[in-house]
Every structure is written in structure tokens, then in C-alpha cells.
Length: 315
Image (cartoon, rainbow, N blue to C red; front, top):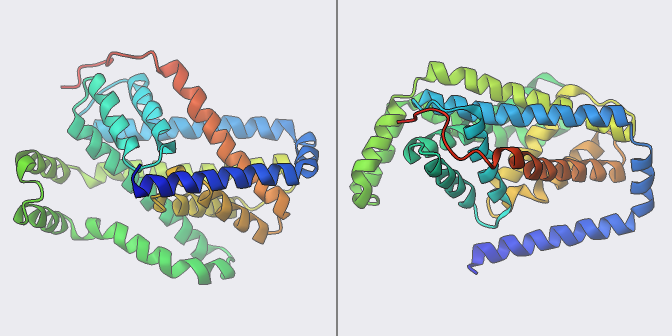
């Protein structure tokens, strides 16, 4: 086991043990909150989360379509959902490897799968960062503005710079790769990959970006409904969208932690507690968000795991 995997595994074990300790130490409080759960709101939250998974798969399908890959939703869902399980394995490479493997089995060009995956990650991060910045600018969050505005505006500028520089940035990047011979063995494939990127129409990408932006707002609605189901109090929708986008982004960029386990929950707990949600309730809500995603990751893959052949010709 290499150092990165050892760090990831150790961190996960510490987080899981901390969760177990928290659950036993606060068992009576957790049991009381769960016993008073508003079932109608909790059920609504599950339906909203189901919609969010649909949006995630649909957006990746649109990214593939943008690259000329036409395949049915069930085939795309199978690849996305199966490879998504790999995010819980220590090491950041397993999700893209899994996506490439299952795409290869579905006879979808690997290069276009990885390009669409890169586009997916890019647009998810860009849209999440946009939601965070707009929330900090448009709503009365002075304490958070002081802490997060400068780091996130810098992160946003880093994300947006390839779009502003366009082909110049792309040529510079691949120029360095070819000059130092980093991909000499795969130079032809790298050039083909570069040409595929150049052909992407940004006007066609924008609706996908808007769909991801809408997704974060729906995530805010999901979190708000979940909070109502547990605490009975209704938080601001835009703060909920801000809190989830921020905590998810923090969890994602800490690459040595699979799935952002612990980072996302810790950030979300502190954000909710800062807005008056009792610490015990905030921690329970954060743990519920993780638990629900794990359950959906496991359950939704079942009906699509039997799809073996592509529904259309992808070549």
C-alpha cells in the first residue's frame, strides 16, 4: 500500500470511528430527533435526491452527445453509476478508470468518455463555485464573505481562465507536453485529444453549465427540506444552496480523501450550526446527507447493472 492510500485509508477509519463514537455518545438525542422526523418532508427529500441523480446522468449524456456519442440513457446511467461507486476507494484514479472500463464494454470510444468526464468535472466545479460566489455577493453573509470570498474568487478565476484564453491556453499546455516529451509514446493520441477539445462548441456547453447551476439550487432545496424534516425549522433556500455547494467543493478538492468523507460533513455541520441549527442536529443532518448518497449510490446501480449492450451505434 503506497503512502497516499495509507493516508486515505487511515483518514477514513478515523472519520468512521468518530461517527460511531458520536452516534453512541449522542444516541438518545439522535433517537429523539429521528422519532420526531417529519415523514412527508423526508419522503420529499428522497424524491428530490432521485431527481438530482437523474440530472447528473443526463448532463453527462449531453456531454457525450456534444462529442458525437449518441447512446441511450440506460447505457449512460450504467456507466456513470457503476464507476461512481469507485469514489469510495482510496486513490483518485478509480472513478475515471471505472468509467473508461465500463464505456469500453459498451463500445463507446474511450477518448471521448474521458474528455466528457473532464468536461463534467470542470462544469460541476465551475457551477458550484459560481453558486458560492453569487451567494456571498447577493445575500447577507458577511462572516462567510470575509472567510471564503477571496479564496473562491481566485479558484473561480483559475477555472474560468481556459475559457478566457481559449486556444492559446490549450496550445501552451500541449506545447509543454510535446516539448518535454511527456507523452511521446502517445503523441498522436494526444494530438487527436487536443483537436477534439478545440472542436467543442462553447455555445453548446453553456446549457449544460446552466443545468449544473440549476442542480446546485435543487440541492439547496433538497438540503432545506431535509433540515425541515429533522428540525422543523425552515432555513433560507439560498443559504442551503450555498452551504451544500461550499461543503461539496471543499470535500472534492481535498483529493486524498475518497468522496470528501469527513471534510464535507464537517464543513456542512459548521455552516448549519452558524445559522442557528443546534450542533447535534447539524451533525445529524450532515451524516444523513452522506448516508442517503451512499444508499442511492448502491441502490440505483442495481436496475442498470444488467444493461450490457449499447442501445445505438456509437462509432
